[in-house]
Amino acid sequence: VSLNMVESFTEDQEQIRIVLTFGRKKDPMAASVKKMTEIAVKNVVKNSRKIEVVIKEKEEAAKEPVSGLSGVKKFVAVASGKGGVGKSTVAVNLAISLARKGYKTGLLDADIYGPSLPKMLGLEDFQPEMQQADGRDMMVPPEKYGIRVMSIGFFFDPSRALIWRGPMANSALRNLLNDTLWGELDYLLIDLPPGTNDIHLTMVQTIGLSSAVIVTTPQMVAVADAVKAVNMFKNDQIQVPVAGIVENMAWFSPSDMPEKKYFIFGNGGGKYMAEKFNVPLLGHLPVDEKICSGGDNGKPPVLSETSPAAADLENITHRFLEEMKRIEAEHTPHKVEVKHK
Image (tube, rainbow, N blue to C red):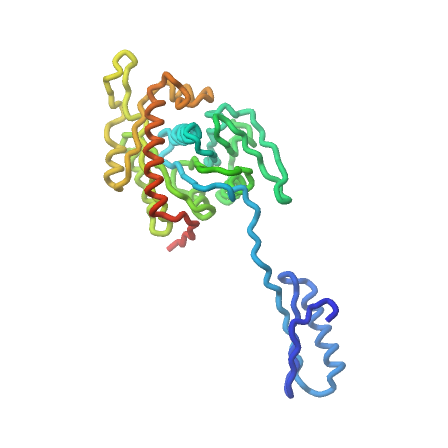
């Protein structure tokens, strides 16, 4: 009684019932206290009434874990299905272009096994500092070209292979998401790995995605996998709107004949996908030496005044923003629970 553990005491001609409450689940003292209470009551009560002692755990109000995501307004996945089609290139340049237009933007490298953002942004030597926030150690993301960035690549030698099973990769992804001090962001772009796997499921179960951008090349081999990526987001259990398709490596134009277009990887893959799924074709990116060199030397082509792709990237961003206005009016982001049938 002195410990405020007695929630209720009732008695009648046949029974005495005492309900004891404990402040934590599976309290190791519960069984002992129950037994001692039964003995104590029997010593006082000299008749044969039944004695029932019930253990009850206090219901604690669910505490929302401190998360670095609380200031993020919109989450956008950048996916491809196929590796090597320029998904990270599109993610990096779209993020920078959004920042240049005045949007507070972050970029998460969710490709746990093959992170490329540190190199593409010239952050290979960066090591995140830790900062206390509400009693937790949080990672402070670097800011480059106006965007905040986080990658597993900041914590490992770039030549090291991460030989991790799915649960370890999923845990790392959640840590990168929740334990980063993103601050106030209009957009957090998430550069997903190729395929449709554990990482993608973890993503849609952890945050409410506002939309997805799908990257492909014109080649039908790449389109086939990009179709799977769209189908994943359109799955009945997931239902994430696709903001549009970006066709990378669409054509090659020689510098001395810029009006000429050579479709060296095929033609029309992005258009085919846009029509098949009734989603916008956000734009095309040509085969451009500055896209390749910009990714290698940490200077994305959207910053270049001489790259033909810079204007294309700005147009893609403009179309993306227009599509986001429509999506916001029709779609409420939500976490999903994927049930395997």
